[in-house]
Length: 207
Image (cartoon, rainbow, N blue to C red; front, top):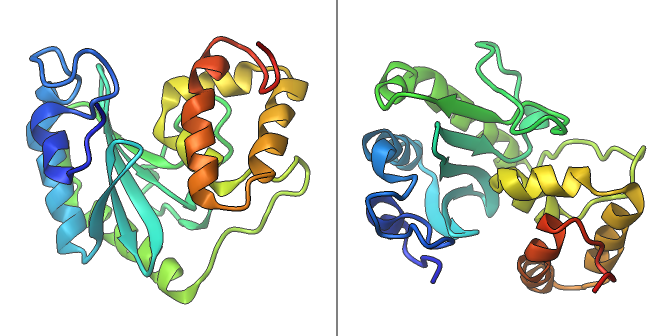
């Protein structure tokens, strides 16, 4: 069962796989660094919540950043990263098809403390945009992807890789289906239901 409390992530993991609450969970090697990231986000004035079974940090009602842990690294992912100036050149794309660099990747627990001033500055910049209601301009070269799908892909590298490997028609089938839902909650539920199909390389209407 996926977690519903932020603190559970740092002691048990996300609950999305069979390694939940075991020594083999991807969170376990990174607990010190993840906890340090959590403190930096909270100290910056962000509101923690659980979204997509991960700690998500909000300001002015907007998603600012998400924490995630993987086998080889852990990450701080920024929403609306296209707005960030990245003067320290620390942002990386989450995957090969990510348009804008949007994550800070850590491969040792100690990196968080070393980068604390930079992380805090980037969080502050993102919070400023959220408070002012500033969002990146839409890219009209492709069909408009619902925010919930974009956020789910940023938060789930496996899902993102599988989605971008789909044929254009299959990708479009999901966008059309999700855009047909009026409520964000409905779109989020559909994305969770579609995940296995996307991983399997199928379109929204495929059986």
